[in-house]
Image (cartoon, rainbow, N blue to C red; front, side, top):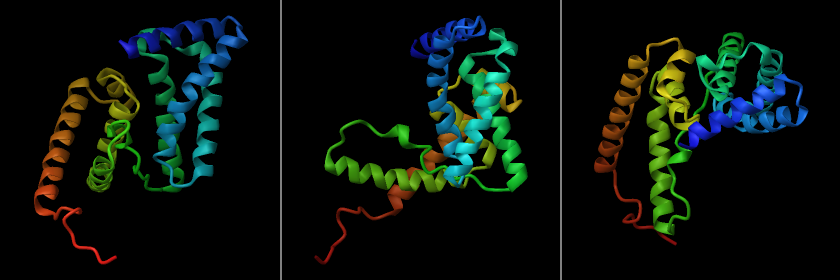
Length: 198
């Protein structure tokens, strides 16, 4: 429901922006900037490179406003598609590998207890390590699904895959990560039971 309301609000703002409403454009810009920044900053090693890419994407977004077709998806999926293509172009130019340290940040519950926080940080470290071992395209799909909150159909369009293929990759990746994480937890020692010399 939240996504539906967000998508409708974005569509209304974009329609008003096309008619020359500067306030609507500013509001839409403020709403799409954070997801674009998050999507790119998690994949580009240097902050200044991420900032350059965000500028490039938002410039393209402004240029392409008249060509947006709401029948093909939401405004957010459209701008993230622009970001995805800009990232591919940047990777081709620099042949850089993208870190995903924050991919699992959305898994944390607010206000955890100190014990929960210690356990969560350890789990996040293990999960980030496991995610890094996934193929690059699978990492991108997971980031779009869980970080970008895109629908399977939107991810399929963006990645030029079938919706069934996206669903299958997400399902397989989540099951594999869960199994690997459980295996790591079963094989590792409890960090709180380790003797420490103070």
